[in-house]
Length: 347
Image (cartoon, rainbow, N blue to C red):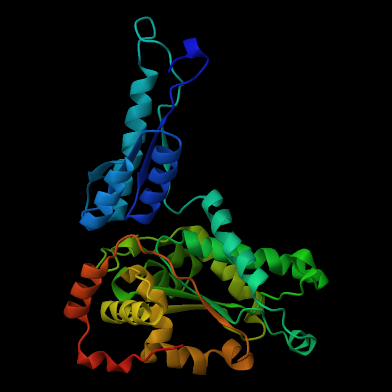
């Protein structure tokens, strides 16, 4: 519609995605708001996800070897659309709004982080407040939150949520007067070895080298974790969370890198235990507990979890759009062999 009808032409939404973010933009933008949505996905995106995007109404372009290449094209597309709109001859074409297109980031935006942070609120509403004796000893409400890390958006949100409670804990009380304690909550950042943009950056020797680190390529079945470089804000917030307990010698930010085989095996075991399908990106977080190789050092070596064994461990289970029964069966056949007996179910 035009200004003649006191309305503006709705802008086009352009996003880059390995799957889940694009589905969110399309569901809200195209399905609920009737807007045009363009999603640029890398060549590694599963046909299953592309079909879902198309069926929801997105205009899908497949481009590039990884998400970073797709994201570059998405940003260029927004510039092209807005440049074309600015050069329209309004003497022959009805005027529209100046902005023709908006770029919708899949993870690197404060609004997304704020939304993700609400999961901490939900967890603390569900979990019991530690006893007075446990609080006096510094026991956190959650011993650990284990989450898969891609570009770092979810991690930024988790750390924002923990910080919000920590700030209110300065007077001994969290939101709604619950005596929650989150400073000592361990955040376990899970990735596959071939998509470890956060883990490898975190282990760089200096803050500057952390911020500058980038993978040369993504070499993993967990393609939706496939950002070559994590957002710098994730590193900054992780450093802040770690510094709060560094004087006590406690490690509250950990990295956990699993193999593709361990990620798939965790997906298979989770499906058997809970009758839910998740994709390999989520399997990276589940592998922290399902894989004995990863679980044992976490529980036996981390000084926080050793000190507070009663504090619950939370796994953020996410990422179910790029999987179905046939895919999981194929991955199981390809990746999981009898040698994977080193993984044992954690219930």
